[in-house]
Length: 117
Image (spheres, rainbow, N blue to C red):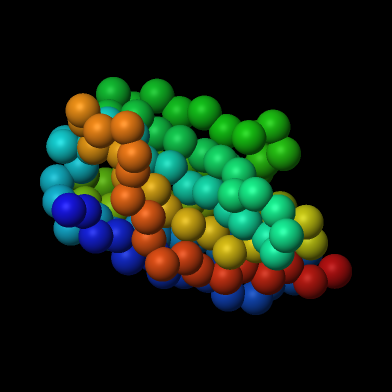
């Protein structure tokens, strides 16, 4: 069982920045990949950014060049630095952890990000 606690959401004006944090209850060395997803009402949850155990990253096209995913193994925390925010980035952001040898990951409770124009 992996518990994830997200923080850092809030309201910001377009062009601003926020940093989301996701603290895991286990060592990140036991996690195959950590990812951030987001969801708006009536839409499917979409992957925003992902970082593997080996440090490889990938991003949704809509956030490339604006968002950066990183991790601090000592703090068992993954971050999502979001810059140049747009109103369309408004969503609930969820952290996901996929342990090795598992096909389904664990989810955090979500944190709201609201970007006003």
